[in-house]
Length: 329
Ligand code: ATP
Ligand code: FE2
Image (tube, rainbow, N blue to C red):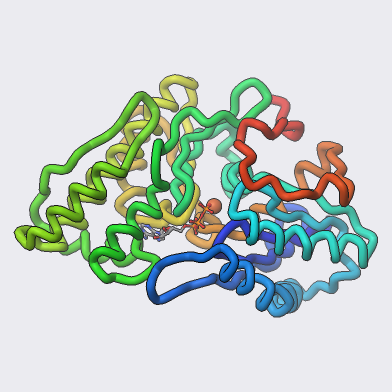
């Protein structure tokens, strides 16, 4: 089955073409700004400006034509309304024009399912979903993907980006902080906020900003200590969820998952408890359309059908609102 995936939950507009389990192309255009802020209407304008060229690019790389597509999958939830609406509109137009079925998918669930596709031996993982807007620990239980832990305020990526903005590093800040952290020599004590399986970053951000403004600490040490602290929080809640759910696989998703130190810490934790850790390559960690196409395909195969009327965006849908019809174990 040839499937086109459309991703547009936030700053990424992505188009992928997959043929059954094979990703033929995975293209995207990213909305960026020099100042770091993101105005939803401006991001939507970007998506409208680029959708045509990203579709052409993806079709060319896949050596496919729109008329051959069997299914149109798009990110229906959750995300910024303005942005989601662009992807949904493109999906509806293609569906009506080519008389092909469309299917809307949940972006968070897609992050987990792409991991299960890429690592066939990984059947029932806990997902540490660490992106800009989202920080959640998700696992399958009783026919749904449940959120066992999450951030009580900012997503970890937005938190990293906020501190990076304070340091004038530009957007996205995560990769720049990762680089600076490698030069850090001394660990500076910072607030560590874990509540059960939830985390919180607000107090830490204020504390870091105050330390930076005092001029007493090298920024490399601040970046290093910040990474050690927040990643330890993420690893702790992931481990607690694994113990609670009695699962012995951890998979990572989201842009912050590209961070090598976070991957290393997850790996150490998993080794210590005799579990397996899986990190997809970066193109599947960040927001991407391949995961949307794949989830659309397995949902379609499980019998789900969607009419144009059902294709309304759901900006606030939670992971556990999705009935998982494609998994039986
Ligand atoms: P979502 O809509 O799923 O919340 P998103 O729109 O924020 O995702 P992603 O591509 O998943 O997009 O993640 C972007 C975030 O990842 C940014 O906050 C960025 O700073 C962070 N990031 C990217 N690379 C790294 C890295 N190497 N280390 C830490 N953070 C990183
Ligand atoms: Fe995402």
